Image: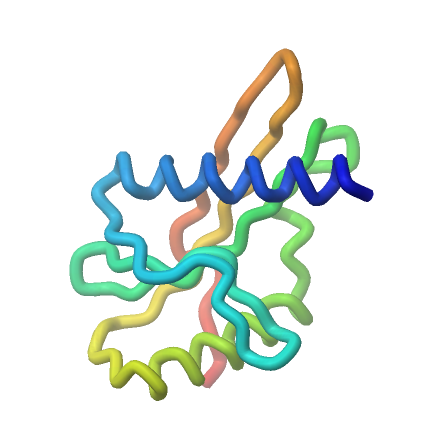
Length: 120
């Protein structure tokens, strides 16, 4: 289990560095509301972006980004709504997913902007 947690931490750090390199401003990492967590919250221009990061050591079972289920999306949307209200955010909202393959031979980042649309 420690290996799984460690690769997740490394993936979130890589995702953060990727977003910063693209000019995003990081507001929060690992923000929690109850049992729900948002990995990264950032500002991109006039949008607040809620990012889910999925890191795997291979794509044997598919692209890691495909692991963001409708249930996970619903939890992100609920937590994002609370975040926006709590912090009185007046930006457009966007949900991104970053899938990362990370192993000794490769480091691949797949950033899907606007990966899903919330149904408020």
